[in-house]
Image (cartoon, rainbow, N blue to C red; front, side, top):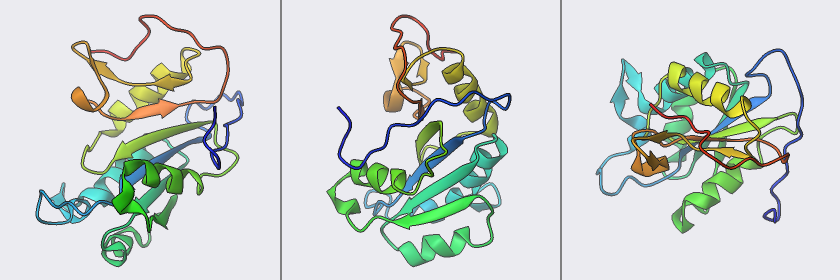
Length: 178
């Protein structure tokens, strides 16, 4: 069942493995345990949000939707001048992470054929994102979740995933592992 308002992505073949791949970068939280805004933390000679956007774009994603909520003006200011980036304000961010995913998905163009969902406080290199994309399109999975040492998702070292449109679903040991 598809959540009301969530589109199913269409399968499109292409010679470019990252064509039509978009990312939702969740950066809406209050960072209460951290005591300061995580997207604005200094990281690799810039801020964490800018670094992660650049890595996603360097990996070849067609566009990044950054979902902001807490201190939206400060985070949006960091994104000015970055090509391939759209920021969306999630006014419901206090209701949970899923509201940011729904808000971000609404800004993903209909041309998308896959979607990466990543939290800003889980920075990933372009190389790792590229590996995830290649692993995702090498099979027929609807969702690819990286795993390391037998652990998946946020509990493992990698906590980003790639979803692709409906199609034959294959279960089994196919996964991105180290």
